Length: 357
Image (cartoon, helix red, strand yellow):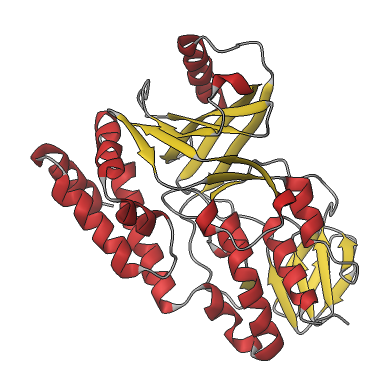
């Protein structure tokens, strides 16, 4: 019998399984299709990632721009992960891999759809974000030739052509020859349709004179504010609510937390849940959800102005809000700095949206 049973072989589940294996724990990884490719594009600020082999980084952008009402340069390096190399990096020969769909998960047992029952003293659900009526981030993207961006450049957010409801352009290099351009809805309840995002994307491509004959590369849809885990089953990754309410990022967090979670499994299993959701992390996350609530209720025409103020904040304020799961003080300071810098009409809109969320 395994010491640890992880359900879900995405980046988060694979990272936790690898970390447990590295500590000598007998580890089983369960997934309905364990070898299926990871189709999503995973980007991250370099400073948020743990140390990784060079081959796990597919592309780097040292010049990161954003455009709200004016253009801004964001301090920091932005990287795109190489999915297949990341999978290889997280694979271990001594991890038992089981193909099967989990029908039920308890703290010590997983029952598969074909009737098999797997047991372990520690079971972790890493099957991805839960479904429900939540605010969602959605996007539709196409792959274009690298020359649509300058070498080493990424566009983190471009709110020109924002529309109602507002969407922005996210563009980043995939490698030396390809660039991913996505039309993105940062947050909406319910999430915007792929049809609307596709129309917005084609309009943006036409305005920039970029190729229109490219097939759709990917579609993105995931919740930003599902309930934090409360039940008896341990969870990890998006299933544990690790998706950042402001950015939608979660993979860097999972890669960073996996070794901590594994050490707890080896030494004090009862503390595993606290490794993911300490009191400070929970308070910080809930504060950022207040920011998400304000954004969801903000008049659409005010959204580019809101981000203009955000990108004018000092780098420390920006980073404190976008990273640092256990930084309640820094997150609060960033939110207060933005509020104080807002003109009266936008300040009123922010206050109303936040207090009615």
